[in-house]
Amino acid sequence: MAARAKHKSYGVGSSSPALRAIAAFKLVKALSLLVVAAVAFDMVRSDRLDAFADWIAHLPIQHGHRMLTKLLDEMLQLSPRKFAAIGVAACVYAGLFLVEGWGLWRGKRWAEYLTIIATTSLIPFEVWEIAHRFTWVKVAALVVNVIIVAYLILLLRSARGHR
Image (cartoon, rainbow, N blue to C red):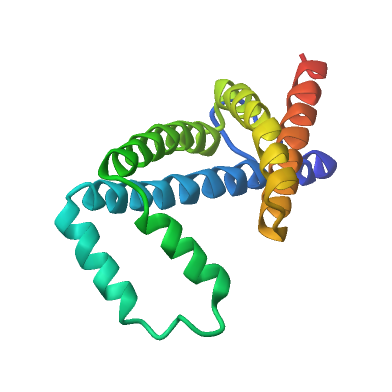
């Protein structure tokens, strides 16, 4: 009986601490994308984009922050239509991450499958992005996503073995 109390079972409708951590990660990503969408939709108005460009021009970042300056220059070259597309894409991905996060938090088996499918489908794009513009942040994101997929596959296999 004591050995049984030590081993906690996480059945349907409950969530392990690891699943809760993955869910929290997905929810943070969703909230971040909603912020990106809000900013992108705000930039659709050309007067906002012009005001942002003026504000950036007055920041003391021209010296010693070459990558940031390049990123901001590229961003300011985007048209309002591209900002709208970024906003829509951010909303779609935020919706997906919200559904995944909510389902994982609630311990739903379908959310584990959805997360495996969605995360695995994006891994080739992450690898392509790393091959074209290498950064350690992208590598870290890829590693985290591979670990999440591997963990969920192991979890589903062990659950299938218990049936």
